[in-house]
Length: 268
Image (cartoon, rainbow, N blue to C red; front, side):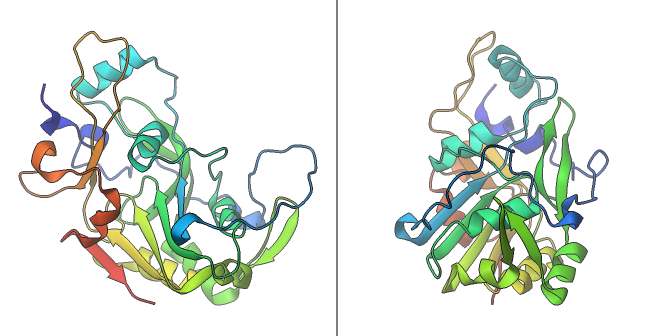
């Protein structure tokens, strides 16, 4: 099978809508950072070239081996997850966000005014931004997600939360961004008209937000039938369009997707 069939979810009609849980667990304003012994507050980080990339985790449930993942890919049952995000971006993360508050908390780890571009790789649809969940051979299920209503509510009412045993406000999060910063949401359909999700994020973070009107397409290299290892080296990504073909319409230059005709920018 050639690469032209390797698409996110292998189902261009899926909106992840049936199995996902739209209820966000962040009402308690506490992040789900794994518990551990107390540690000294680390010094604020300085992002390289002003860029921060945060990846999400959607493990297979039940867990599968690489041979089965190859079979899923060739059989149209495959979904991209953290290993694919990592291969494409070159980013390795010690921890991925467990909920929306943890995502905001990760932003506070950086110096004031230091973030010029934040890349967030996740699953999404027209109404929800996934934060974490799991995958099986039929769908991607969110166990933590956030919608436009929740984002807009926090933007208008203010937000206080605890992250790594420190107290923060929404102003603390906003302060980490440079004046001309952008937040790029690498997820399916989040910029589908009307762009309420992007607008809500813009109002929450006070930065310009970029998303895509259609599905992201992940293009791993050609896999061999019966292989016991899944090859991701050189994996590419693109944005769905009529007649999409991995060879012609995907790229390793994932940053450039913000200039794709399907990209939408909601300006600050």
